Length: 261
Length: 161
Image (cartoon, rainbow over all chains, first blue to last red):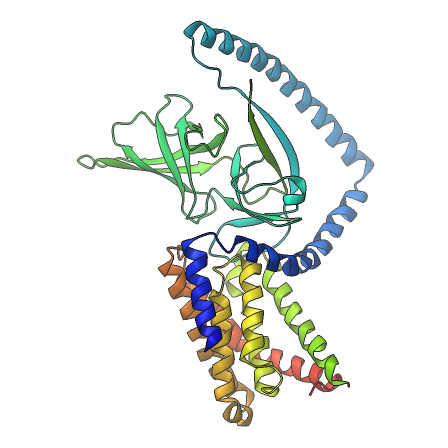
């Protein structure tokens, strides 16, 4: 009976406020070994696979990487030129520069299935590495999600596809702003409160607008996949596909954002 | 077997249940994952009600909450419910043949999962498919005979009493 009441109180407290974060973190120390127990065999398997790569495969991979590196370098040169130009123009306009310095850290995703009803993953970096709640996570293609729980050596990432996740975005082409909400499905987000007349087209790249203050500005989030605009309705139904490889990624980047002086 | 060893041996089965719960499966197989922890809890309450009771089940459930990132106390209460029902009926259940126990297992887990579902809806967690809940429960009931015989031989092998 006592336990019944305790669990009811716990549930209410956990839902209403974040007071239980420390309690949960303490319990998660007990759970971490179980995570590792499940993850380690898969990790070892991958390492063994890496080890037995053939020479030819390695050479091929190396050539590909080199080619990619070259292409990216060329693009980076242009980007740098553009960035300085942007800064100069902004100075002319007397507006503050919005570029940020980002410090990054690579984290690995543990091979673990969590509750199938939420979109979350666990990464192998925790408060020991300076991870904090609310920290943005990206992969090579775009924004993945944000940290919602930090343990000592691991933390939980809420993916942008989770039903409880929303991220402010804007169209890279027109600058139209919207909020992208998760749906719980793997390859789908929806834009809320987009008027039927808003300048959003199929194929538009949506980047983070930085308005919520959580996510840095200008990282790709999703591409517009489908627009259903019923005449007479105020809002259109816009479905977008995340650009980050949410179901295939093995490594993600943790971002630390510091405003540039 | 010394008495203080038995908790360790029981804990091993619980840890295995935890591991099986978070073991990554291919996308199509996720729905068929049985509720391992509930099965293990039902077994121990059934055969050793004086050792493994509602209290331990609650603690296991609380750890399960942290493991799954669920609302704290949600699975704790669900596990407690399963343990309590099993405890109340353990005399009758022991006399049943295994396939009839399966039906009881189905009902117990259904009730507990119904509670989990209900709290999930209450806090606004989306329910992607009701099928997933249903299939998981059915699979749990179907593999109960296997789990029972495995754990039973484990129990006899190490004379956990």
